[in-house]
Length: 211
Image 1 (tube, one colour):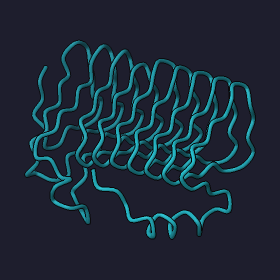
Image 2 (cartoon, rainbow, N blue to C red):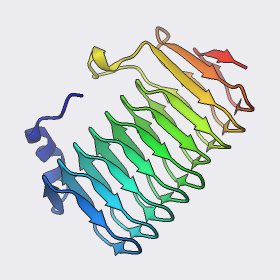
Image 3 (cartoon, rainbow, N blue to C red):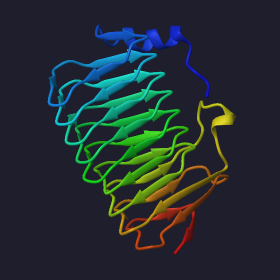
Image 4 (tube, one colour):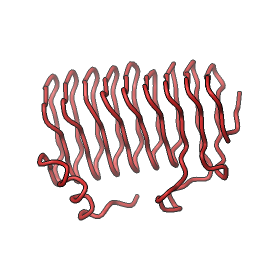
């Protein structure tokens, strides 16, 4: 996995926040309320149970983990995954670049979720806007609801090595996509698995459907 140059990292994050930790993880204990943004480079962010984070959480070269029943805002991880426990409320977008994104039962994401090279695996989760991926497989399980579209984007400025030709989208166990499933690059081979009770209520473009 290619890591971003530290100089570029500092340009991105130092210019946007004065609450920056370098080479250090951030751990928030159960039940705490934090009223500022949490930023770290070369470290992870771990939020305990029943917490409330009023700022955004951003990590470069590290993961973000949110435990059960916590409330957070925008989550953004570069070169690290994002893991959400049960009944987490995200009042914003969730972005994982070069890492997977997982969410458990009862979690609600009030925004868009996206990855570039990581899979998206949602169990009993509600997403109020779009789900976007470039090169990651998508798994929707146990009555997950996507109120927007699922979109597989073109590579754009991303290196060719980041652009897999074959992707799988599985919408199973009563999960529903209320919008469309859109594959923007016709050269991509995308399989949309709708077996075991999965549904797409909108259009399906440039994907092979299994029912």
